[in-house]
Length: 314
Length: 308
Image (tube, rainbow over all chains, first blue to last red; front, side, top):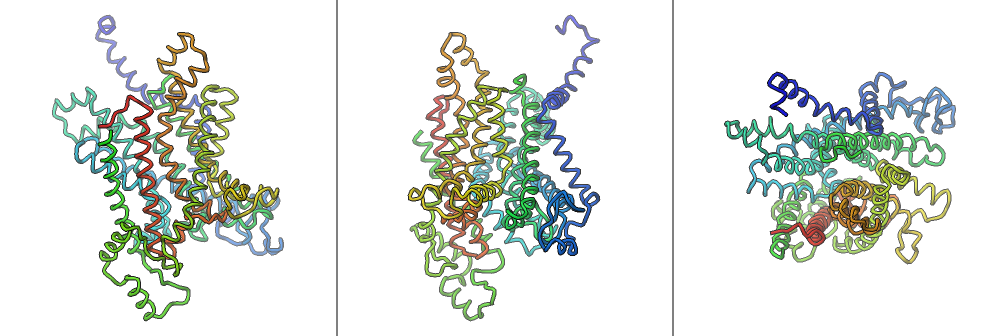
């Protein structure tokens, strides 16, 4: 084939190929309806989180006492007043509070996955690259972290460092987010290790070594970019877990403190009114559910689009 | 193989040691202590209590004492429930927790695997969409939401099941809601995993060979597809079982199940050091042992895998 096409066309062929790796993935992704729905919802959640303070009709912690008094001190139901989704028993606008919850959940998504990458990536890469004893010890270390009960470990960490400077950042939220990340990086480390182990044996790595490229450069310029696809998938699919962990912690009263409104604490606060004012549980529960589904659909779509093993399977 | 198992079992010891060391350090680094009360106890009382329980010893002595006692099977005293030892607390709750966990595990496997298999066999058909719908519900519903909704709908409104308590087989209706709430997520997880694994197997050459030599569809599915597709599914069952039998704080609290899962959160608030350590060790040991079991099973069901 190359013999017949001659020298002039070769650069053009090479260029089309290199552009098509991510291009193909993108085309496969946007053809997947669920993934597109998930992606659009994810973007919506992030926009709501960023723009929340500007589009919220009220301050999330503001109590509208005259209105709540006029309603006999009961939560105002949704869709029938100036409060779109109603209020809680203290007269706080539920929609504005949900927007604050979106901000917390999306921050969790980013912070936890940043911690996961910052720890999991170097550990997995080092284990794969150096192999031997380094590999054994690093993987045993991940076993140790894996063996901690997540909930207990996160609470213990957040209690132990509560009084430090770090523990007070972002009203104590940052500490909880990082604690969640500290329990979640093991999967990433194992994934990176597995990916690099198989890439390490490829010919282009051997070639790079032969011309004297440094170890660090081989790992960062040749191995990691090739392992990018599965890592993107793992990060996306790890986000629902992080959001769920934060909501669960907030539900039992750890992390987001009043008056901040995590979706988990909104459910907990609404629980006593479940029969008289079900909207206080249903809307935050729907918010969590939608966020979890969106990231899962997007992650599944990314996996189908990026995983070469599954190519052409649709 | 035997050498492999022995080595893995021996590895569990350092893992548990490091887990206990980190937990012990963090626990004692946390401000406050087991004698904190709304109304402050007099300093002399606290000093007396500390001396009685050895809490005034240097931290490394306390750790070594704890290790020494634990190795002999004594988990120490509880500081919250003054007349009970941690052994009593664990012994009282572990049966209930394990019972609930195993029920939820079996339910997840019994529903999750067929759901995934059927979805894959009818890929992009109605059964697939139904199964996907069920697993999406399972993934999207946090356990605390599922538990609350089940409780309100089936116990409070319909009055089908009791709102709290756990009587085991003596009153089976007390087991329904906690088991359902606990297994919702695992069902979804297993179904998704099984479906993906089945779809992968469908493309394999040996399945095509079986089809082209005219084997009955039934035997292709059972012998060639399901058996191979379940191999990766087994790997997630180990950690899942460890997670389920060590108890869920949320489920046990919402349904007032008298297990040990309730202590995951309360023991830290109360600085009940012995209980915190016991809970951590229990979970870590369950994870380590069940992962080992899975790895060994893995080699047993997949003859291609050989450990050395």
